[in-house]
Image 1: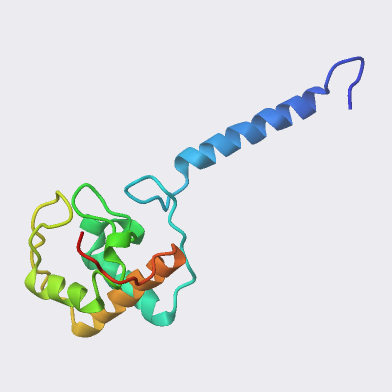
Image 2: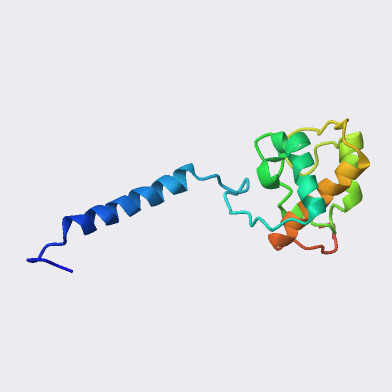
Length: 145
């Protein structure tokens, strides 16, 4: 509503305040972005995946990032390379128990991660698979180029 050709000051202040709040939210809100800057869809987790998230956050997130988004120390698991047809569940167990030499990424070798039980590793795998499914990463046959 214009009054004498001008917008009421309260309306202008409201629009400015909304803009400031929106910008602040974008800057300060926690992001679920992956290493490529894309947003990661976060599903409602099953009870097993929720337990896996706790174990992942404790043992894996330092290198593999919050929500498995990756960091400068380790790759994202919410990435097609880790689809179940290329890296099956056993690959996660093997990596945790034996470590894994650098092969897909430039992060160096992953050392073994002692202290995780088979049950915790299995829950981590469920967590990663639920994140992947929520982000349209599905099993597909692995083919060498």
